[in-house]
Length: 116
Length: 116
Image (cartoon, rainbow over all chains, first blue to last red; front, side, top):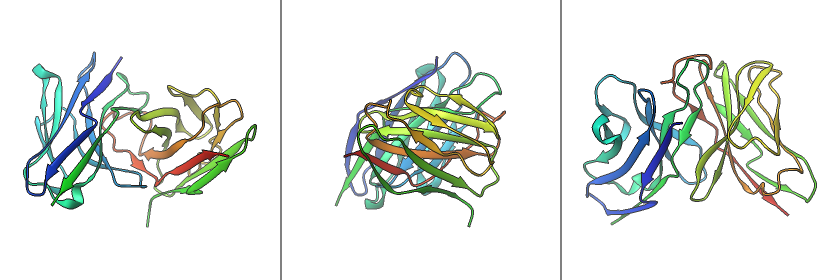
């Protein structure tokens, strides 16, 4: 079965600092991986996704993530944090090995705090 | 504007009562999903539907029921059998439920359910 582990439930950075949110996955098939962001009291928005094309994926708001098969990782980074980046971030892996559904398995989430 | 609408935003349930959470989408998506979000646990799949008049249980379906009589609607009923219903419930949809593991999920803004 597929699973996702997000290391660190809470990450704090200063404005302008590098953001690094960690995600490791397990999957018996080549995975499709996603990062979603959730602002307070809102639904989730897709930041970026990996679908077996380029291993370095660029998303919205200058976020990017690199798929590393040898490390089973898909860490999310941003060169310079903004106050508006403060939110909860979820890593997810596509559940099905076949074509019969696209329900995602989510990690437990990482809360990003940004201080001035 | 196209999107997913969840209502109500806040809902209170009395002991032994069934309550229904509404989810409507005008994106013409085939697939719809219900997730439950608890602090520190991320999102867990309750039910999903790939097509009208069909739905499948997710990881935590016990105490919940759904229907999919119309493409645009996927209501979730929290029954009295669900002993710990307090959570944030998120509805989502995707274009096609019968394929494309790399599909993007579109989320509603959520319903916070609390027990009185």
